[in-house]
Length: 357
Ligand SMILES: C[S@@+](CC[C@H](N)C(=O)[O-])C[C@H]1O[C@@H](n2cnc3c(N)ncnc32)[C@H](O)[C@@H]1O
Ligand code: SF4
Image (cartoon, rainbow, N blue to C red):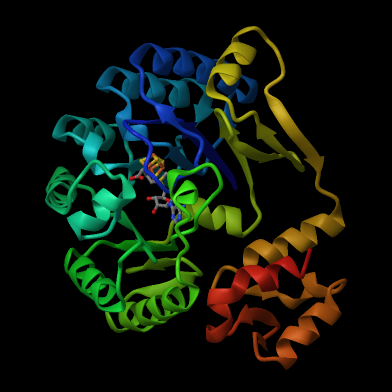
C-alpha cells in the first residue's frame, strides 16, 4: 500500500483560526508551484499509488487550467491504474460547476468540503468567505455531477456557539445525507488572529458537544471509525486510514510529510523557498528520520489507537506498563487481542497517546 499526498498551499483568504501552511492565491505563483511539484514528482517515477489525497490549503482555488496541470503531474509521474480513491479538499467559496465536472472526469472519487458551521454569523466570526446557502448549492451540484462519496468538515467550540446550536447544526447536516462527517474541536494556534484576540475554547463545552455528536451520529447510522471521523456505508477515508495503519506515503509540496522506504521526511514550510529550492536543485527536506523497529511499534500504537478497530496487542510488548495503567483506569480495553480506547477516553485521547512515546 502506498499513498500520495499533494499539498496546495493557497487560499482565497486565510481563516482567522487556521495555521495550516497556506498563503493568498496568486495565479503566477500557483503556476510556478505546479512546475515545482512536477519536478518533485519526478523523483518517484512510476511508483504504484493506492490512494491520492489533494489537500491544503485549498485545492479548489486553482484555476481550471491549473487543475488540468496538476492532474497531469500525477498521471505522468505515477502509476494510478490501480488507485482505489482520489480525494480533493474544497472550500465552497472557490468551487464552480465547471471545476466539479473537471474533477469528476479526472476520476476524483471523493470530495472533502469545509463547512464548519451552518450559521452565517459563525462563518463570519471564523473568517470564512462562504455562507451556508453557498455551501448547500455546491454540495448539491457535486451530487448532481455524480459524486457519491462526500465528506463534510465541521468545527465545534466556535466563539458564541452553544450546545443547542451545535445540536441543530448536526441535525441539519445529517439531513444532507453525506457519506462522511469529520468533526474538529476548535484549537487556537499561535500566530493566528484568534490567538491574538485571546480566544479560548471552553473544553467542558467541547466535551459535551463531542458526547452529543457520538450518540447522535450513531443513532443516525454513522459509524464512528476514528476519533474525529464518522462514515456511512463503510465509506471510510481510505487515504487517511493508510496513515492510521502506519502504511507508507509520498508527500509532495511545501510542508508535506512523506513516509517512504522506512524514512519519514518533512519538506520546508515556506512556499517561495520550496519553489526556489526545487527549481535550483537545492534541498527541500527539513526533517529526515529512519524508523527503527522500536519506533515503528510506537507509531503503530499512536496512530492505530485512533481507529475504533484498535491495535494488535503484540505491538505493546515494550509498552506493557503504560497499557496496564490505562486498562486499570478504564481508558483502554483489550478484546480478542486488540487494544482499543473506551468511549470515555476518546475525547482525552491525545494525552493518553502522548504517554506511549
Ligand atoms: C484544509 S482545511 C479544508 C479545506 C478548505 N481549506 C476549507 O477550509 O474549506 C481542513 C479542515 O481543518 C479544520 N481546521 C483547520 N484549522 C482548525 C483549527 N484551528 N481548529 C479546528 N479545526 C481546524 C477545518 O474543519 C478545515 O475544514
Ligand atoms: S481553513 Fe481551509 S480555507 Fe481556511 S485558511 Fe485554513 S486551509 Fe485555508
